Every structure is written in structure tokens, then in C-alpha cells.
Length: 409
Image 1 (cartoon, helix red, strand yellow):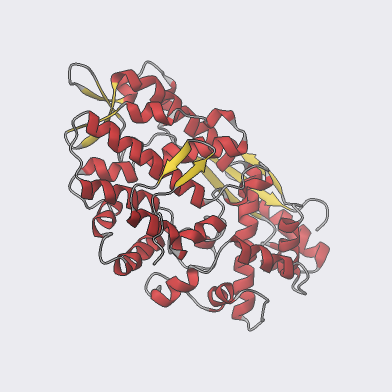
Image 2: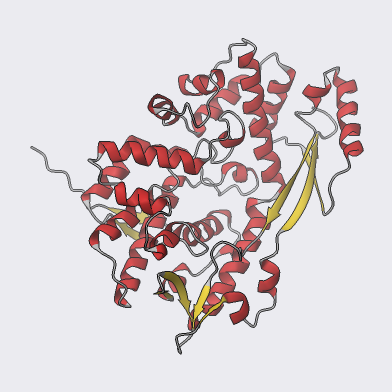
């Protein structure tokens, strides 16, 4: 019998070598549910703006696990007790935290799956894997859901200073070439500690936190909420919505079996059973791209043009405003398009639409970032810092956009 070496090493462009801590983690990484993340882009349609942004959720999940290993070592060194079971659960929870993402990361949630978030699908995947791995994911699921009594462990998975943010800011900054997002995640981790069951940052790490919050703000405006990325993602959502609408009218569209299933079925959280989950696990970016390559020649005016725009990167015109877009301005663009191409108002609204984007770098309500002073005092970062900008970062800034076609479709 051939014995497989399960303690392998990944070479990561950000951190260098990433080690797999044990055979259970190896088996989870090898599982088809997790391998699918190699075919899910981390940043959706952002590659249309930043050509280097082709990294995947697979890269990101491994990076998060690597940072979690560093964090466990740092906290144990500082006298925080973390059992072997808790350590294992942390690695599993952070490794699988994004496993429920659909093609191009967020587009599915707003188009062909009805009100089911990627976090809910991640949980369904984890529960399915728990059955397959003899309930060895039970504690990880508890921490992932935030139900575990040791609050700081849950904060490491989902909080203001979780390993998810510590990795994606640095990774996305690297692959997009946007230097403003390049945080020092190693330094942040080295400054972590635990007080009263909550995560804190030691006083000497205060400037690293300031840099982290500023990087988060800049990355959102410059990258994640870049107007062209937003417009491209909205187009993709509309492609899938139109495809689902046509399928509902009995039009047969060329698509993979997995995509066909979601186009022809109304899927919500109540009927998201194990069969649906297995079909979802077969769906990735490639299904959507190959479908759009076919649909760009479809006779339907809306579907054809939307797909052509994305395939050839001939996108809509986008304008950002500080005030809400006036309805008459929107209506004006819709009527122009309707008359020009002799289409219905509903069809025209696929190409002309408004929306809003908002950015809040630091949330004061849910989980604060607390600074630990040498005398044992704990204080919120906003009160602890001499950087006046941080208070402004806790306010939500909203911008409004309008998208409409350039001269000619």
C-alpha cells in the first residue's frame, strides 16, 4: 500500500512557504469542495480594471490558515491557553470560511440564488463535510457561527482584526499592484493579546492598526468599489438575471448542467438541500465565462449585448455622485435607449440603472479594536490614537452611481 505524505508545503508569493499542520487539514484541502476554490476568482470582475487580479479563493484560504498558525503561536507564547482541539478548529474554520462563494465571488448571491448568502452556503458545506469526516468539524462550526464561549477565538475568524482581512488586504494589494493596501500582517499578529476573553492589540501596535484601517479604506475606494469594477459586476448580475428570466419563459440556453439547474430552478435557503449543494459545488467561473461566450450570439437583444460587453470589456459608462441620482435623469436615459433600439422599458432598464456604494473602514458598533496599555488599561482605538482621521473612518461614506450605455450598443 502506498502511504501518501500529507504534510506538504505550498509556496506562496506573499508569505513564502505555507505548511499543512496535519493530515485532516490535508484531506480537507484535497476534497473536491475545496479544490473548486481554485476556479473561483478572489476579486470577481476586478481583473477588468487591474489585470493582475487573477488570484483565487484557494490562494486566500491557504494564506488565512498560514496567518492563523502564526497567531496561535504568538498567543500561546504570551500565555493564552489554546487547546489542541481549539487550534485544529481554528485552522478548519478559517480554511473553510469562504468555501460557499459562487462564481466570481458575489454575483450569484444577487441573481440566480434567492437570498442565500455565501456565509450560509459555507456553513452548509461545512456541515456536509462534518458528516464525511466523522464529526471532526463540530467545534470549527461552533467557532465559525460565533457560538463558542471563548469569544476571542470567534473574533479571529470573523472580527475587525480577523485573519480574513489580514490576508485579503495584503494579497489583493500585491496582485492589483495597489501599494496603499500593503499592510504588515506579521506585525499586527505579533501585537495581538487576549484580555477578558476578547482580542486586544498591545500599545506598541497602535500605528500598525492605524495603517491597517487606512489601508482598508483606500483599498475599498480604489479597488473593491472602483466604479468600473462595480459596473462590471452589475452587468454580470444582470446577465444571470436575464438568463434566468428567459429560462423561466421556456427559452433553452446553452449552459453547463450545473448552471442550467440554477437557471431553471427557484433556489432559496429552504430548498437548498444536499442535492442542490452538490450541484452548486460543480459551479465555478468557467461555467459562467463559457456560457457568456455562447450567449453573446443569442437572438435576445438584452442577453446578447450584456454578454458582448463583458467578453470584450466594452462596458457601460459610469458616473459617481455624492447625491442620489434624480429619477428623471434615469428615466431620460431609459427612454433614449428604448426609442433608439425599439425595445421595451424593462429591457432598457438592464442597461440603465443606479445604485449606491458605501465604505466604513472601522465599525464601532459590533466589535471594537481595543488597545492594551502597559498598566493593564484597555481603550478603544479611536480614543487611544492621536490620529484624528480614525474617527472619520468610523463614519459610513456613501456614493451614488448611474450606469448607462456609451454612444452605441
